[in-house]
Structures are given as C-alpha cells and as structure tokens.
Amino acid sequence: MLYRALKWLLGLIAKVVFRPDITGVENVPAKGAVILASNHLSVMDSIIIPLVIPRQVNFLAKEEYFVGKSPIKRLRTAFMRTIGQIPVQRGQARAGLEALSVAGEVLARGGIFGIYPEGTRSLDLRLYRGHTGVGQLALTSGAPVVPMALIGTEKIQRPGQKWPRPAKVTVRIGKPLDFSRYDGMAASPAIRRAATDEIMYAIMELSGQEYVDTYHKRPDAAA
Image (cartoon, rainbow, N blue to C red; front, side, top):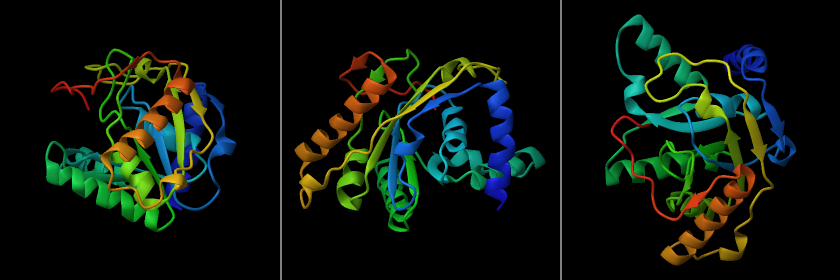
C-alpha cells in the first residue's frame, strides 16, 4: 500500500519534472517472474524505472545507502526499501554470488528484478559489454528478459551534481526475450555469453547507443 501511494505521488511529480515519453509498457508481462534489463546512465535510473513500470520492480542497491543513524539517513533507508531496493555488498566475488542469490529469490516468488548488465553507469553515454550474470539469471530462472532503454536521464543528475534538475526523459521497452531454447545449458559460459549478448543487442537497438565490446571499468566515484 505504501509503495503504491509513494509511486502515485512521485509519478505525478515525474510527469511534470521529467515529461517522460514512454513506449512499450505493454511488453511487460502482467504477472509472473520478469527480468528487466536496462542501460544505465544516471543514479536516477532506479527511481525512473519503477515509476514507469506498472508492477513493483526490485533492484540491488549499494549497502551504504542503508546504513547511518541520522534522521536523513534513516529516511533514505526507509525510502529505498519502500521502492523495492535491496541492499548488497559490491566489489567482491562473494558479493556477486549473493546478488545472484537475491535476484533468484525475487524471481522465484514471481516478482520483477531490475538489472543493469553493464554493472555501472556509462559516463560517456556508450553501451558497454554486459556481464553474464543477467544471462545466468535468465537461464537458471526461466524468466523472460524484457530489455529497456533510458534516454536523457544523465541530464537529470550528472556525476558530482548534488540535486536533480528537470530534464526530458525517454523510456523504450522492448518485447520479452525467451531463452528456453537453452534449457539445461546454464552451466556453459559460452551459452551465458550468447544470452547476455542477445540482451545487450536488444538494449542497443532501443537506446541507439554506440556499443563498445569491452567491460566498463567503474571509476571510484561512479555508482
């Protein structure tokens, strides 16, 4: 109930401030497990996406967003949990396994799990090679992957900018991708790569970004 109320309120504000142009919402299945795979240009992406998707979207978020005892930090923690953000450690192999485990739990209960296959924001607006975690999730869960692209969100809050500002945002949602043809092959690195590359190609088609076939290195200040 709180999620719906908050989404309704923020949705009204977003329509005025960001003037979103949204296409393809009908491509998101009305029920059942779904992997929502998007490009990543801004810290605001994880706010924009839940506002335009009819169902609740669960994302992984940096654990530090959920710590702190000051009133502001407690409010931030409550807000992050309300909009479906799940705390997870980053930068360790064990953390990566934990992230996949959490994602699997969301999908097992028929929820929507949002993921940025690039792993971090693209600061030069190009689309980078996807990490194969998204392919592994699709293969092990059997959930369809809905590709989507955000355009213009980098203008809302650039790196180092303290407060967001109004900007026109475009959201394009593609048709679900089915990987059932790879049933029983999730253990194969080549198959995980093939599935991931197919997802990234779909995102590229939606976003119109230049594709770079290398992993994006995360600067210390990026998220």
